[in-house]
Amino acid sequence: MTSYQIIPVGDQALAIEFANRIDPVVNRHLQQIGRRILKQHLSAVKTIIPAYRTLAVAFDGSQISFAELKQQLQPLIEESMNAPLPPSKTWLIPVCYGGEYGPDLKDVARFASLSTAEVIKEHTAQSYLIYFLGFLPGFAYMGSVDQKIAMPRLEQPRLEIPAGSVGIAGEQTGFYPVASPGGWRIIGQTPLKLYDEKNPASFYHAGDSVRFFAVDEEEFQRIQLADRLGKYQVKAVTSDADD
Image (cartoon, rainbow, N blue to C red):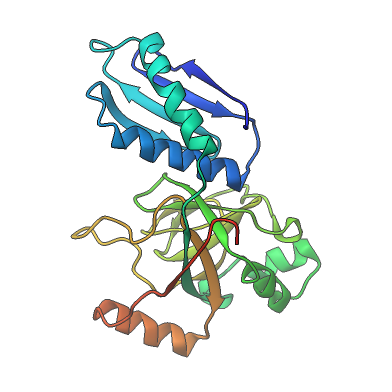
C-alpha cells in the first residue's frame, strides 16, 4: 500500500498526505478516501478538500480531537487504499485551437519546436485526469501534458481571459469556466458554457477525466449556439479503472 501520513493543520483540520509527486493512481485513491469519509456522516467532520496529493479534512475541534479523528480515519484510509478503484468517466470536450481563441498556441509551438498542428495533436492525444477543482468555480486542474509542450506560465498574467479558455501551465492543463485574470498559456477555447450561476454544479467532477478534440471556428459557433439553447449534450465514455 502507498505510504501516507496524517498531520494536523491548525486545531480544526488535518491533512492526509502522500508522497510529493503528481500521480493519477494516488489521486484516484485519495478521491475514494474522501468519498468514504463523507459516507460515514461523521458529525464532527465539516468538509473535505482534495488536492493533487493531499486530502484536508476540516473538523469541529469542540467535538473531536486530532488524535481521536486520526484514529477513526486510519481504518477508512486503509480500506480505501486496498479496495479496487471504481470505473472512470471521460468527458469529450470540443476546443477551437489557435487564432483569437488560443493566442499562446504559436508560442507553445516555438517552445516545443513543433508546428501548431503538432501541438494540437499532442494536446488531444490523451485523456487528462481532473485532480481537483479550485481557484474558480469549476476550474479543473488536470494533468499531465507531454513534457514537450509543458510550457511555464506567463511572466505577466493577463488581466482577463475569456470564459472557456483552455490553457497549459507546466505539466498542467485546464479550462477557465468564467472570465478571470490568469497566467496560463491559452491555446484554445471550448464553446461549452462550463459555469452557470443559476445551476452552479459542474457536470464534471474531481476523479473524472477529460479528452479534448479539435473543432474549427464554424463548428465552434454551431456547438456554442446549440449549447446555449440546451441542445448540445456533452459526450462521455466510461471505462474500467485499469483501462
